[in-house]
Image (cartoon, rainbow, N blue to C red; front, side):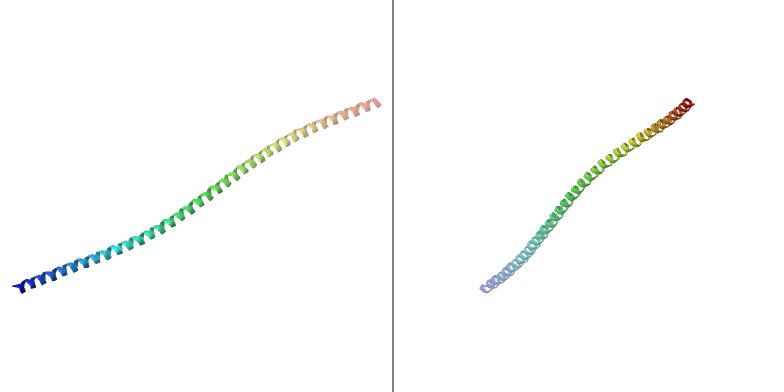
Length: 134
């Protein structure tokens, strides 16, 4: 009977040992799985940080490009304003030249009329002198 009990105890011990070994193996596998997931998470985190850094650099470049575009737009607006001012001045000068030309035309017409009158007066004077001499 003691031998049967010893055998049963040995069998239970072996079963318990096998069970404990299975539990340890399962724990080791789960621990390995957790370690692998943690490593993957760390790598994903590093990758995310690198992507965020790259995105930050891209955003910085975009902001710099936008500032450059705004500066160029300001320069263009200033140049357009200056050209508009010059165009207005040229337009005013053309208008002034037109007025001067009109005035010159009017004066030339007046001079022509005055010259015609002087010629008539000279002819009248010449006739009067001719009549006086005769």
